[in-house]
Length: 477
Figure 1: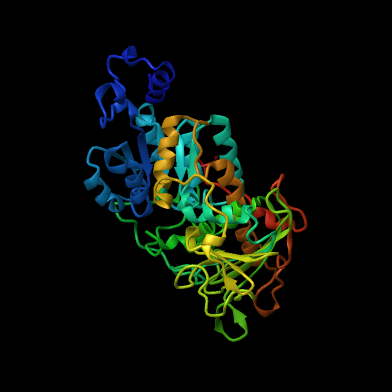
Figure 2: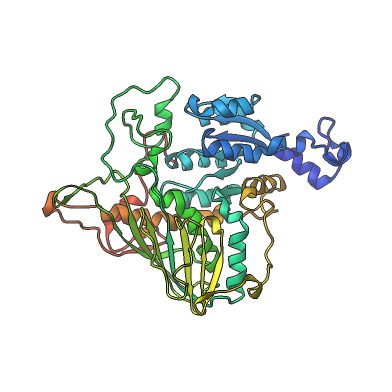
């Protein structure tokens, strides 16, 4: 039997004597965790965020880390020391082939451009998956991952940990209790990018180090020569690999308004982006990279929770929303340093928060409302808040599909990611042009109307090339 089958049998039958080799914890005494009660996990991406995702899910030995996959040996020095019993691989496909029967669940914490191919392969093999934000590199991939998760009936979670935080739930309770009325406008901003962006593509030419499998790192992206300027973190600003400021922070900052208001599919999107001038009158033109800053506006129709159309505006690269009337001028909005923030403007008041939904506040009549005057807690909290996001997923995997709620399952995270990535579609469309220099005509600088059901821009067909990218041979979904 597989580990899943054994757990399922014991859970449903409740017979301790069913297996000689596997004994449930209640038979062996309080505080003892039988091997059959542990989740066997494979982590793909072992450095940076991958390290923290794996160690959080490992939970000091409460679960098993069976294998760690990383294309770069330099990134897994630390985790190999902390988890010496885990088998090490470079290729996730080889790891799944060899370890598949021993693995219940897979964590995907790799650069954005490889999320979908790894998660899809894991789900095809009936593995539960945890995938870092943004769920995917483009809209098409998000749609497919949401559909595959439902088809395979696996437990899923996107790594926007603030979705498990107390702040988001507190904001939902306040809004549901009528604290600010119906919302028509939302403003969200971030200080990202905090990596080089809006610059010419850096020169390559040096051979890849022996510790790195460059071809595997590229994955579905078109082949380019190894470039040391991209790794391990600075790939985020290049469209072949990253999703810019929106991809990095959108799933953290847009989650509160999506959860609070119950919005889903955008109706349209438009944007403007910052320019860099290295010569008079002619801005730099770098369509392969994300811009230094952007402002994106999305419109949503009324939802069941919020019976009003919503205009949502996103700012990044140092831009931020204006301080609204109704909030004292000296009041800091969002994070304590103001670097990231969210504002929901309602018919009766204004609600704000920072990253992960932290620091939630309500303002009415030009003053902050004391929390004692706001609706009381009514929603269940996640143990550990945003710090319990990984362990919530682990426990749901052990409970089995459909038996326990998680904060950001693909049924929610996939359409949410589609909406986040609509901003990037607009930015890339904004950069489309005919001709060069001062006489260039930018054809995509318009409001783009979105048919969510069919994943198509209906009024400017050239923008649809950014719904789904081209995949390298051997890497198609």
